[in-house]
Length: 202
Image 1 (cartoon, rainbow, N blue to C red):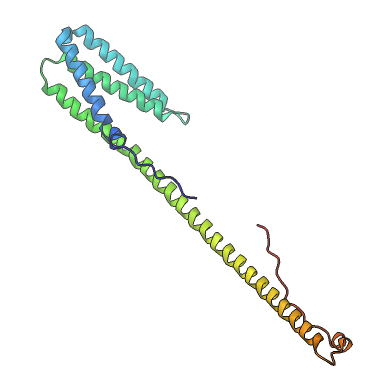
Image 2: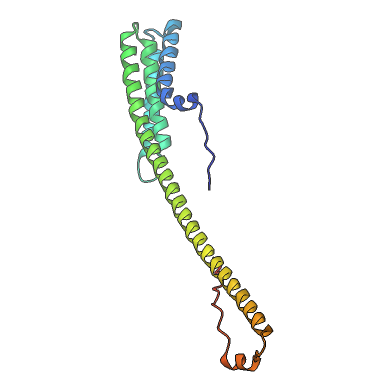
């Protein structure tokens, strides 16, 4: 019943929290590198990024449409669309203010979406721990009741054995006395031993 306690490393706990900012920062850095290598004010490169971002957004819209929509694929497609748009602006623009503004907006949006999944995951984890604790408490109560029942049965059996031993000793002592009549004892009848309840199997 005892579950091993696993101590997770602080990097494992911090990685999901920094992943959105790391992703958007990586896109911004790659966009600025692309800007320094000839993408600045390049209409062809900007048009390419617009087409790619629009295609990714369309794929996300199709993936999320209908009852059979897959939220994972839709979220991935929308994230790719946003990343492509950010990279396109960072590569085309000649200054940092606009790319930084879009980076802040993209990072805030990413954290807003991630927070929803973190809350869901935390809620599921708390529900699982609560269910496990309730089952552990229920099993512990059943074990305590069975232990008390078994102890009571053992005590009754011990008292019955002691009573039978005392009765046998009394009969032996009585038989050794002069004038003992076994026929009179048989006619009077022996006292009954207490019934010993047999343990039940569960």
